[in-house]
Length: 156
Image (cartoon, rainbow, N blue to C red):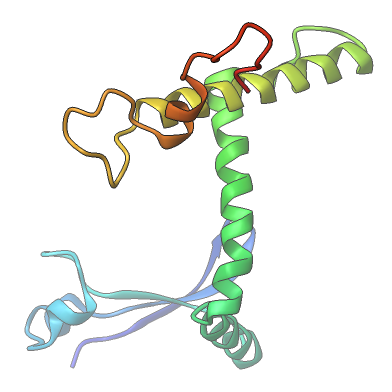
């Protein structure tokens, strides 16, 4: 049996204990594919420094499997996706103007651009229950695109 290496480790400002297994022990292990992904390097673990922190992490991970937690997180994921899209596609992080009022206007227009882009993507998407060769892909459009029957009738 080879020697295990135990040493402190700091990742992104957080303390861990790193455990490295000996290469000779790891290479000959019959269950290696279940615990190590590298073909040549031995297994290494990053453990939390106290049992209490480990139990908190295990409890949080168990909570994440519940339906209620996933429903709440889906809201955050949607917000994160919107922010990411606005930052990457529409330059949200940089203001072109000075002053709070002008910057606010830019943010409102950026949100509007994001919504327009999403509507355009939605209109281009093929609906799930579409019939082949149907000229109008969405039922909402087919209602709105019919011409009015009289000059005073509104389309919308």
